[in-house]
Length: 138
Ligand code: GDP
Image (spheres, rainbow, N blue to C red):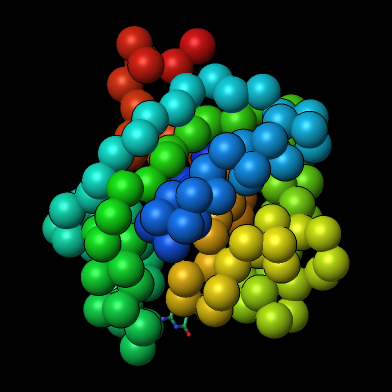
């Protein structure tokens, strides 16, 4: 069972002023913050982060969107962190997300879906390392 995951609050949510409410929902769900930064990605950096999706038809849109404004990146800790966080954020498409999930509450569309959550322990570690040095986490 993993105890760490990685998240981003995406540009749609930061620009609409949802950052505080989303962090509140995450913390009330039992997560503690082990690293956090407010940062704006370049297109190149967004492309590197989502390299795994390079061949998907929406890759260009995704990179454009993720570099369109600031994001909040964070490493979060809780028992069963990865799986429980995927439940907390809900389905990729907010129209299919369960009631009360972060995407249901705050996301507008399948592309602009408010938050990222790692899909495995391995990716949580890779994604956390992408954003944070050892000095920036505890
Ligand atoms: P996730 O693990 O729930 O974030 O979903 P995926 O790994 O399948 O996709 C990664 C991200 O790509 C999603 O969170 C969306 O921001 C974006 N994405 C997925 N599908 C689409 C799509 O059909 N159109 C667009 N524009 N973006 C998409």
